[in-house]
Amino acid sequence: MREIKKTEPLHSQVYHIVKEMIMEGKYQPGERMVETKVAENLGVSRGTVREAFRMLTKDDLLAQKENSLFVYHPDAQDILDIYECRKSLESLSAKLAARNITDQQLEKLEKIIHESKKALAMPDTQKLTSLNQKFHDTIAFASRNKQLIQLFEVINAKVLYIRNCILKERSESFAVLVSDHEEIFLALKERVPAKAEEKMEAHIQRSLKVANTSLSKQTNEPKSSLG
Image (cartoon, rainbow, N blue to C red; front, side):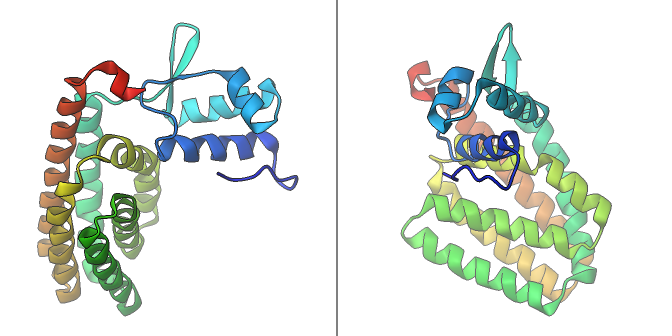
């Protein structure tokens, strides 16, 4: 966890710290967030935490129910909505990247795939999740479309959150997803836009099925398992 620094506004620092903890699953989906506890843990005022919570609510990572705030807990429809957006955005980013990607970015993707296979052999789910994010980020930036990149970043936090908190127990799914990454990479290397678009769309659709299966499994488990 980050340490509080004097060079950045406190509420901004608390926002980043709590966001990081949510992303890493240290606060569980559906967990109630209490200002006083967070303020005490971080050694800041309740007002500072309140402002950070407002920022997290704008990100939709916290949700208000009556007078309490809870960590975002996506249902099946939320995941479907997010992945439908992903499918459109990332298919387009792959199509554009096939035209615009640099040799350096291709080398980066190849290295990510190599490292993913090593993490898969361990298996290291946390490393795989991080590498997966880097893979998709690289392709988005390779599109060279500023508007697309901005839209991509809007939903990125929720996508990463779903990967960390909803898919963390689905390590068996990573082998297929890494295989998908290889196919996307080859389409980009061949610089065939239609093929890259098709491979990315199939990949996101497969990821959606994994997410829905995992969510259904969690929904059927006792609520105590969600914290």
